[in-house]
Amino acid sequence: MTPPAPSVLVLGGTGFVGQHVCEKLQRAGWRITVPTRRATSARHIQHLPGLTVVEASVHDDAALARLLPGHQAVINLVAILHGSEAAFERTHVQLPARLARACLNAGVPRLVHVSALGVATDSPSRYQRSKARGEQVLRDSGLELTVLRPSVIFGAGDRFLNLFAQLQSVFPVVPLAGASARFQPVWVEDVADAAVACLRGDTVGKTFDAVGPDIMTLADLVRAAGRYGSRQRPIIPLPMALGRLQAMLMELAPGEPLMSRDNLDAMSVDNVTTGQWPDLGALGISVSGIAAVAPTYLRGPPARSRLLAIRGHLSSRHRKEKGRRN
Ligand SMILES: NC(=O)c1ccc[n+]([C@@H]2O[C@H](COP(=O)([O-])OP(=O)(O)OC[C@H]3O[C@@H](n4cnc5c(N)ncnc54)[C@H](OP(=O)(O)O)[C@@H]3O)[C@@H](O)[C@H]2O)c1
Image 1: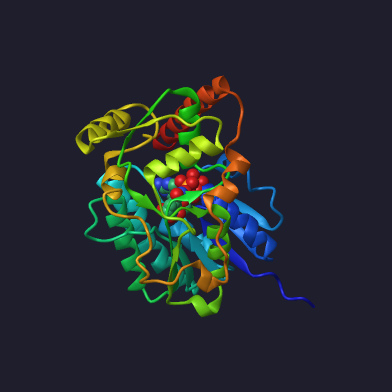
Image 2: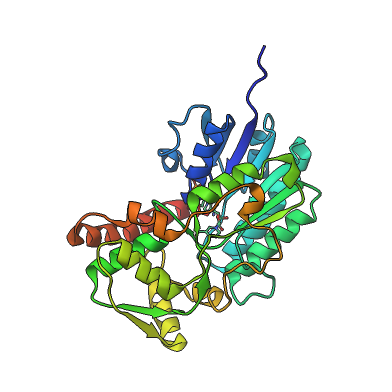
């Protein structure tokens, strides 16, 4: 008799990276459970054979205790990019602590945690400080832990390059704060391959920097989005004070801001590997750059539909967030 396929619980499996992780896991023969706050958020993955969607709050100890039994491992991809100090604390620190306790209680000690490149407890950014504290909580927990730290992630459905491509198809110039901030963008498929590879036993106790082959400034990324999209527009670099004002106004507008003051704070520190941790080559992954991948998904519909897409992007996020708050 063939043994049953191994089973993994994927927190954040409905998200941009999570969707690709679930597809790779399914192909690698895993059974998958994805908890979500709303079952409708899982409509793009629920067709995958062997994948079960469960509507549940991962912030609830009892729900985690019900979810974990029967799984051999957990992947945590839950994160927020914007929010209050309390929201970052709850999502990036308290949730990992809660998850670690639940995993140990349920006898499921194997965890792959997706963090972010550049996290540090002394970072100027709330996002990065809270992610660093979350990592530390997990390192201290006694779990069999592997940590993956991606730089900015691109690929079909990304928020970053798609949005900059859409903006350039509609507006004549791009006013840009933090234009010289440096990143090492990594393809979502490479990150997803890495998350699956991190389930291997030989990665326990290790951290991997998930970075791509190219170091690019934010201005380079905006230019690439324009070049591989439909139109490249001039960039007007904004001084930081003006950038902060722009970000504050974006935060006041409904929906998720395109750029928050905390994002600007994060960009004041380079987002490139320091070489302290191995990169994806150590997992046997040969990474792809933006030039090879972005043209395949950035060329899109004509300008009017892109303006509608930008408005749709903002208002659907607003509706989603409003729905969750209610
Ligand atoms: N995207 C990037 O460029 C990037 C760069 C570096 C690191 N990362 C890291 O990669 C991981 C995945 O990122 P992503 O871009 O895929 O994120 P995403 O698309 O925003 O997805 C986040 C997931 O987390 C869940 N989630 C969000 N807020 C939650 C909350 N308050 N409570 C419970 N669940 C919540 C959502 O699930 P439901 O809505 O279904 O409940 C969603 O599936 C994160 O750890 C992120 O920090 C991403």
